[in-house]
Length: 296
Image 1: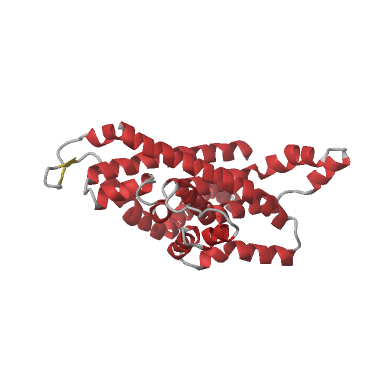
Image 2 (image 1 turned 45 degrees about the horizontal axis):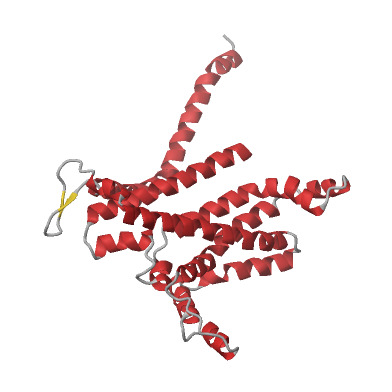
């Protein structure tokens, strides 16, 4: 057998060995990330999951005795269900407002020149340069009964504005906090869009609205979905904003989970609440990936 024939006959085996070596190299490179996720994400998640089936004793201790579903049954309590409902509704309203406000702004950024575009993107990211807690306390001052808004209303002859510790105050804080999470994915989708398709639509006598509805909106839909998920998930589980701007009378699911762990010391129920909210978030994530697959 000639040398070329020997090499040719061994080629499949060599290619298989090369693929295995490449796979092992990939696993080795990804090992630190996998180890980090295992230690700091999966292990705590498993612990919380196990605790959700535990029992709270009369002395406040958590007792692991079999698989107790009482904490999950309590999720359907009208009070808990109402907190879930209000949290989901508020997160949805926050997402819609962020989308309505962000889309024109992202569209404007994507259609500007490089210099203006960079300046506007920096302005969008400036809030990230300061602490979220400090910014939320700033809103507490602004929305307070003695804040600038209330003083302005009184100076104009009106009544003092009482926004603090209301759902409106929480909504304002959530929209402010998560607006950049909607702007950036929308900008990314619009910036890489093929704008010649819009020009072609206009050349075919489509109106501005028709070009937007038939071309721009469908092509920017991945950004809309990504931004909506990025806003909805953290808004649903938000704790700082409702706690500072909502007060004790506007409890949302994030506050309620914290109160179960720290105040009521009912860790099983707190863990079950955490998994209840994770189910809602998982459903949103699945919708996102399925929508992304359809748009691919």
